[in-house]
Image (spheres, rainbow, N blue to C red):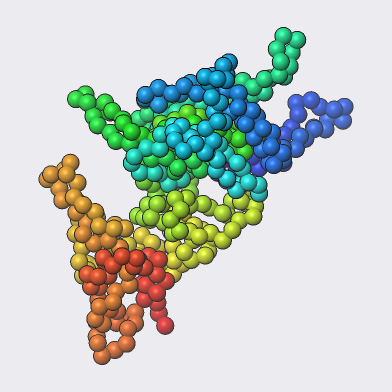
Length: 397
């Protein structure tokens, strides 16, 4: 399985960095410690292997975006995967630079089809089919020259469950946002038909995969580059604030604002730069409203005003609102046509600080004399919503 909680993974990685203990004991009963490999040196090795593989193999793609990768035997009729680099048409091989572990990874990915729907955030959920293999260099023998080979380790053909991109390998969460979903129709028996979905192949250096700590349940060796072919069928917007774990169970406590709505700079990615293993040279986080180090997508108090975001999104009893929820949605929500007997319409999104008349016009604006909300407070484009405005709720003087 490719799913793995990142916090658990990097805790294991940290331990591996401290000591990988040999099974052999010396006469004085001391253990030998093997150091964790240098990230840059390992990436150089992985990248050389991946590029060699891209030059030595070609692809065959079916109408349904099923992929077969084979060794080139006739260069005249079998163009290498590398020959598609920056192609103007599909398939096209692209590169993405990813800053992690204090180095810049160069990750290749093949776009078979971009998709026509919406792209996930790097912390959204995805409904995806995939096939995974790992890349391994085989040393020269008396009968075979040195060569690269791939070994199958996992496949999901008919996905039913959403995979959280925040809990999988970085190679997935960094590249899936570059693709889009397609369209879905259903047969009479409820089975889905997927069309025009995004599809591609990922060539993942080990530093963006499992590095020294692959899942114990898998056959993947340490430091193995990974190759995934995949199809992106659908996405689910997620909201990641929580209260940690209790007896291994996640205590979910979302603030009501989806992660993609907390992407302040709008680049499609949110990151937690507090993880110094991943980001030893962390930049200023563009998605951290109050600058407290906690990105908004994990912060219960986005603007640092002492009031939780969930509290600030609660609809006051004297304000205009509609719909079933006691909380404001980020933006107005239309009625769901699939439930004709229930009106889910939410006409009022999260407002800005109220700009209407003062409760008592003879007194200055204060915590005891606030302004009233007016319709424009809920609808003005680009408004500073109250959960990101430190001046609201009103503070005591």
